[in-house]
Amino acid sequence: MKVSRFSALVTVIVLVAGLFFGSPFVALLKSFTVADGFSALLNYQVLAVVGTSLLTALAATGLAAVVGTVLGYYFTFHKQTGSRWLKTFFSLPLVLPPSAAGYMLLLAFGRYGLIGAPLYQTFSVQIMFTLTALVLAQFFVVMPLMMQAASSAFQQVPGSLVKASHSLGADEYTTFIKVLLPLSRPVLVAGVITAFARALGEFGATMMVAGRLKTIPIMIYVKAMGGDAGVADGLSLLLVLLSFMILLLVNFIGEKR
Image (cartoon, rainbow, N blue to C red; front, side, top):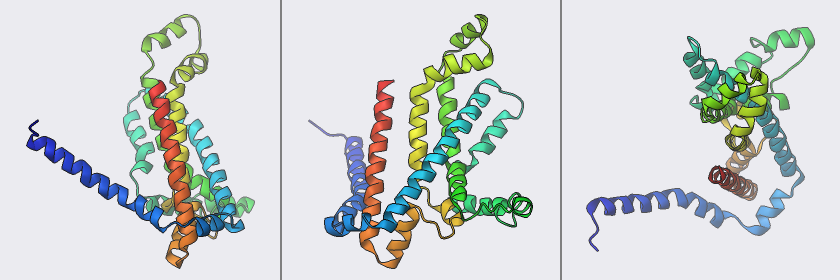
């Protein structure tokens, strides 16, 4: 069978892409040793960092699920003059460099920041360099993902069902709870899972606001720069496995729709 030039070109690109994207994973597996990797992961300090990462990622994802779903609903069913600009504004963290996002959070919530200063001066509340700062940074980055997922989910619900709900006497809240959420559940769940994965892997923004606190990505960076390959390898492999399982789950949900 004669192979066309285009098919040959596609095959070459696929092979080169596979080699390029696969080589870092192969290199990680080659560098990882069971003895050093697992002993590093079982270290109390490392376990505490893993716990901090899971806790803050869950909190940020919970906030993003609520706020993102509400915003997605608003931009789907309350289209007004300027709503497109407002939606674009809320989507900005998707394309902002994470370090810039973290710096802006410092300017807003730092001890001398726009919001942080009155909070500290009035209530002696400091946000930066605390767990709250980590949650806010992760929330700032992942909320737009949830908003986009919710908006996409609600747009897929037939408008006739929404109109039928209203014609039967259901108010906006009842329609949202009884019609929109159940029909949008698979996409919303996939959005929540994706947001959690993104929050767990966030580095740039959290690095700016963490202070002495560490998340998994921050510890990977610190240990890699310090030459502690055992911890860096172990935590990197942990994130790879978690990310792989999360993607499998998202794909499974997508296929079940």
